[in-house]
Amino acid sequence: MSGELPAGWCHFTLNDLGCLSGGKTPSKANAEFWSSRDVPWVSPKDMKKSLLEDAEDRISQIAVDVAGMTLYPAGSVLMVTRSGILQHTFPVALAGAELTVNQDIKVLRPIEGIAPKFSFYMLKSFGGEILSACSKDGTTVQSIDSEKLEAFPFPLPPLAEQTRIAAKLDELLAQVDTLKARIDGIPALLKRFRQSVLAAAVSGQLTEAWRDTHGVQLAEKKSIEDLSELVTKGASPKWQGISYVDDLSQTLFVTSENVRSMHLDLAQEKYVEDGFNSLQGRSVLQFGDVLTNIVGASIGRAAVWRHDRKANINQAVCIIRPRKEALISEYLSFYLNSPEGVANLAGEAVDVARANVSLSAVKGLKILAPGIPEQTEIVHRVEQLFAFADQLEAKVKDAKTRIDRLTQSILAKAFRGELVPQDPNDEPASELLARIQAQRASAPKARRGRKQAENT
Image 1 (cartoon, helix red, strand yellow):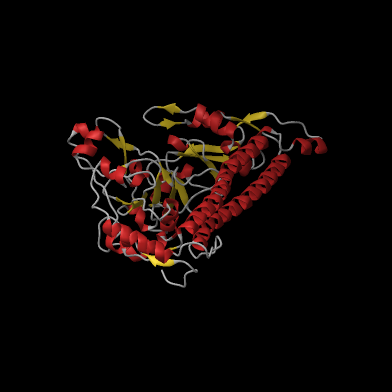
Image 2 (cartoon, one colour):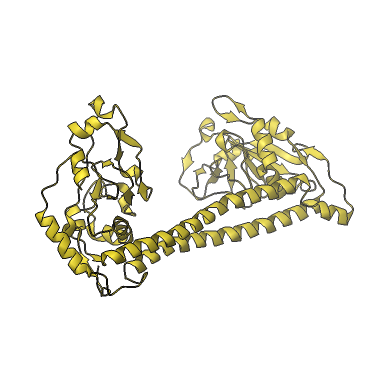
């Protein structure tokens, strides 16, 4: 890092505190090493939390004693130095209990004069710069060069200011986490809102006041067969002797993967030879057709085909072609995607090798069938409410981006010396660092195993 430091601060490296330590994997061939869950054994998969008090895997005390595992006390700072996640993130965590680590983790032990929480936040704050400056080149798995990391320059404030910075970061980042949790909960609320809108739309509740105003009674239910010109499904090209092609001038082939809830996802397009349409003429798509999935885990997803393109479907997709004088395509799509529609269609599924719904079951589904004017009003209201939800969703996405930036902004401010005031009465960091180096020079060499952790 570069730039002028606040009064009383100095630069330091992890080398000034003593080299980073690591870990290893006890032999899987020795059952005794894994016979009891005595000690947390941390690997990159555990490094999703800021405070680690346990690990997914644990090893026995025998492994610690016999395999020469290093135990690290609470207050140690752990960092991932070998993992694919290092392509974009430098995971750091604070040990909340005594633990050991595998070979993909490096550890900074607690040092007198360096607040553990300060070290943790410091490494998080400079994670992006560490990845840029310390990543190894030409390795199969993304890795950090330990020597470069140990030589990376960090800012060091006086000990008392370290404590003030860590306390302020605890306070501010807890508020950010609370905000994140609230924001993260909004998409689920919007999903429930949309489902409630659809439920109200197809039950008549959404247009109850409209019916009163227009003197219209609640409609009766009718079968999809009675309201449609055509209910059919497609077929497998392979069964018809038809090949897939890369020619965009041929027939677009729509599968259940393309049919999402309320929309079509055509990001991944497939094409078949035009000859498929001669063999499967009934399933050639027409503008306004409603497509619904009738095979597999996506049963019930439905969308309207609003494209003027040459297209056909496979056997997992059902076409419903509404009679224009009786049924608006969007209204039918609302029903099929509503809680009632999904439940009714799924209830008709027959689970053989893979769940599927027959065409007769689709035809037999009964839906509330108001007149075209009321259906038009329902479509208008649902689209308005969904547009509102879409706008809110976009704002939530933008807010999440801003919150993510806020965390890094707060950390950056802390390590520029702008988060808490400096106190001229604090011992300068240069004197603190000189004392740490003197203590390190006079200290005996650290030993492995439990005693090492106890003496740290």
